[in-house]
Length: 293
Length: 338
Image 1 (cartoon, rainbow over the protein chains, first blue to last red):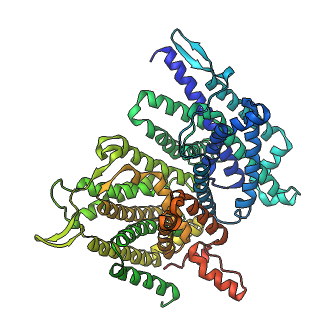
Image 2 (tube, each protein chain N blue to C red; image 1 turned 60 degrees about the vertical axis):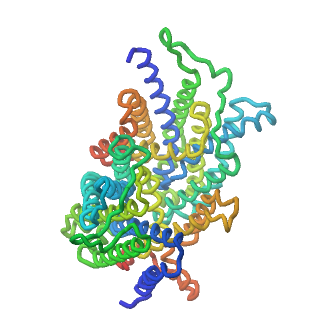
C-alpha cells in the first residue's frame, strides 16, 4: 500500500467513522437518556436518505431549490416526525418492560419499510451532490479524493461539536443529563420531563435523518439500507458505553478504521472483524469504553 | 394441576395431533414449520423469560444445529437419526458453551450485543468460507431415517411421519422445560431473573446456573435447527442471520414472557399473522406489502396487550369484574410456568 492509497483509506475510514457516529449518537441519546432500545433508528436513517431523493424536486419547485434548503426542510420534517412518534408510540411505554419497547420499534421498522415501498417504490436511486461539492481534490500525483466526502466529515464534526456544546454548556443539556440520571427527581424539581423526552427523541430522529440525507449522494438510496446501518450503530453504542457521546465518537472512529482497512487488508474476513473487535472490547471492559456517568 | 393453563396446553397438543387428519399438504407443511419455530421459541424462552438473559444470537445455535445435520450426513446414504440428531444437538450445545462462558461476563444490553457478536462470527464463517457452501448454502440429499439393525422404523422424508416426529419433539421439549422450571434448578433461574444480587447473597453461585441454562437453551435451539434442515433439505447462511434471532425474540415477546405457553402462542401468532397478511386470497395485489399489516398488528399488540397474548384472558376477566389485572411478569408471577 503506497502513501496515497493509505491516505485515501485514512480519509475514507474517517468519513465512515464520523457518519456512523452521527447515526449512533442519536441512538445513544435515546438509549442512554430515555432507556428506549430503538430498533427503528435505522429506519430514520433510511427515511433521511429517501427524503434527500424525494424532497429535492419538491423543494426546488417551491423554494427555488438548493442543497441546504432541502436539508433544512428535511430536518424540520424530521423533528416533527420524531415529536409525533414519541407522543403516539412511546409516551406510554416508559413504565413497561424494555422488551415491550423492542417489540414496538420492531413493528415500526416493518411499517416504515412498507410505507417507503408504497410511496417511493423498491428501486435503487442515486442522489446527486450539488455542483460546488462534486469536484475532487488531488492527492499525490494520480489519486484524487471527492470533495463531497470531505464535506460529510465536516458536517459530522460540526454536529459533534454542537452536541458537545449543548450538553455541557446549556441549561437544556443540564436538564437532559439530570433527566437521564433520575427521572423522578428531575420531575419533582419542576421540569417537564415528558416534554424533555419528546425533545430528546425528536433530536435523535433529526440527527439520524440528517445523517441519511447527507450520506445519500455517496451511498445511494436503496431498500433495507436502514437495517444495515442499525446493527453497526448498536455496536458503536455498546463499545462506546451506553449514553456516552464521547464513547460513541471514539467507537465509531475505531470501527471506521477497522472496517475500512479490514476490507483492504483481509477482504475475506472484513465482515467479522467489527464483531470480533466488539467481543474483545466488551470482554475486556464489560461496560464499554466510557460508562456514562 | 387441572388448571385452565394445563387444559389449554393439552388442548393445543390434541388439536395439533388431530390436524393432519383434516389438513392438506400445504397446511401440514406450514404447521410443521411453525412447530419447529415453536421449539426454537421455547429454547429462547428459557433464557429470556425464565432467566432474564436476553440473547440476541439464538439463530447461530439454530443454524449450527442445521449445518451439523447437513454436514454430518453421508453423501449418498441416509444417515441414522439415532446418532445424527444427538450429534447436531451437541454441536449447537458446544458452541453455546463457548458463547455463554464468555458473554455471561457482561450484563443487560451489553450481553445482548455480545451474543449478537458471537452469532455474527458464526454467520460469517458459513457465509465467507467454503466450509458451509457460501451464500448458496448446501443441500441435504437424503433425509435421515431411524433404523435399528437394518429395519427402517421412521423415514423423515414422509411429510406425515415428519409432522408426527416434530410434534413429538415439541411436546417433549415443552414437557422437559415445564419439569425443569419446576425443579430446584428452575427455581434458581427464577430467582436470578428476579434479583441476581440477592441470589448471590443467599449463597448461590449464579454463573454456573446461567451457563447451564445457556447451554440447554443452545441445545434446544440446535434441535430446532436440525428439524428445520431436515424439513427443507437445504441450509444457507440466512439461518444464522440476526434477522432470525430478532424474529424469534419478537415471537416470545408477542406471546408473553415468563410463560412457556407464551412461546408456543407467540410462534403460532407470528407465523399465522405473516401467512394471513401474505395471502393473496384476502388482500389481492396488496399482499406483497404484507409487512405493513404485520407491523401494524405488532404495534397494536404492544399498545393493547401489556402482558403479551398470554395475558389476554386475565385482561378480559379484569374488564368483566372491573379489577386491574395482575402484573404478568413480576417476581411473584415469574415462578408460575406451564
